[in-house]
Every structure is written in C-alpha cells, then in structure tokens.
Length: 255
Image 1 (tube, rainbow, N blue to C red):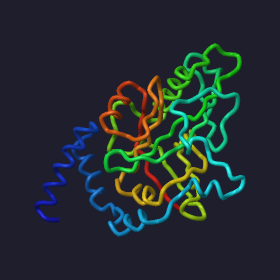
Image 2 (tube, rainbow, N blue to C red):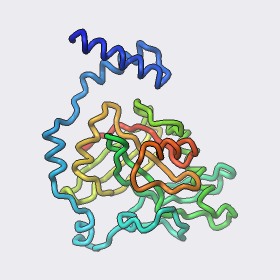
Image 3 (cartoon, rainbow, N blue to C red):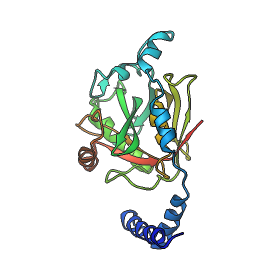
C-alpha cells in the first residue's frame, strides 16, 4: 500500500469512527475491509443501464394483464381499505398503545437513488385497521410501524455508513429484465419487512454492490408527510428528524 493510500485509509477510519461512534481500531479494520471490496466496473454499470426495461409493458402482456396500482403511483398517501391490496406484502403491525390490536399494511417496494447511491423505499399502498378499534387513522399505525422498525435496528437520525446488524436482502431475478424480481428483506430474528415480487431495474440492481455495506432502505410515512417520489438529501434529512422516515443500510445478495 502506498503512503498516500495508507494516509487516506487512516483519515477515512477517523471520519468513520466519529460518525458511527466507534473505537478507531474498529473503524480502521472496517475501512481496511472496504479497501478490498470489488465494486461493479463502469463497463458493467453501462451494460446494465443499456438493458431494455419496461415493467409496465411486462405486466400488461402477462396474464392476468394487471398493472399494480402502486406502479401507476396514483396515490401519494396510504388509504384505508377493507382488505390487503394485491401485488403487495401484507405486514401486520401491532398498536403501540394496545398490542392486541393489529393493522395490516400493504407494502410495496420501489427503487430510488440517495445522492449517488442506489436506495430502496418501502411504503404502504393501503392499510387495514382492525374493525373493533377507534384508532382508524393511518397516523397511529404509521407511528406503530416506525416503532416496530426501530426495535429492529432502523434509525431516524441519519443514514448510517454501516449495515444494520442482522438484516439481509435477497433478490431472485425474474425470467427477463422487465419481469418482477422476488425481493426478501428480513432480519435474522425472523422479522420480515418485505417478501414479494417487485420490478427492479437492471441498472439499479447493478449498483447494489457499489457500497461495501449495502443499500439504504427507507420506510415511511411514519406521520403526516407522504414519501416523496425521489429522495432529495435535504428533504430526507428533515423527514428522518420528524419521524416521517426511518432508515437502515442493508446488504444485498442478487441471485
């Protein structure tokens, strides 16, 4: 290792130690591991970006020829529904105030970019509260979901540069690039955030290996603000502080 590279590694370790509240030795070991990480090449990224990708046409041409409502993005906020929505992952969420009461969030996952990084957004298309509760508004259930994720290692304050302990994402590609992939986001203790088919662009999939610790997964809304169509860094910072978003970095394995 050159003197310049060694100095850069030490500086990166100091920054990481400050940001993540780590001992310098621990941060130095992490940064040394990062230095050996094999990120995708420019040629690989270019080839992925040039791959034809049209999930809308795929859904339209594949029986039952239905396009998921969330892919059309006609709604900006979770709406109340009598039953979970199709093409979504049904996630039970117990009430913080009364854990015996549970709502079901119909979650979908969509790709985004956070600065130069690939990112993923998981949000509810609909929510189905229990019939025998006065807590019918989404705000209560959104807050309960945020608390549930916080207990699983997600955080409000900022996007960590380190992977959240215990979390992993696995992607099983579809039969062709525009076909939905199977995406599973799960914690080692058994909590499953998402396990459903969803379209993932080839260019986005190629970038999940850019950061050695994985991809930031943003979940929301937790309160009154809808999740924006794109992730502007300043707006994300405000929404994390207001508990409208919660985030964890998760390593991806693409099969």
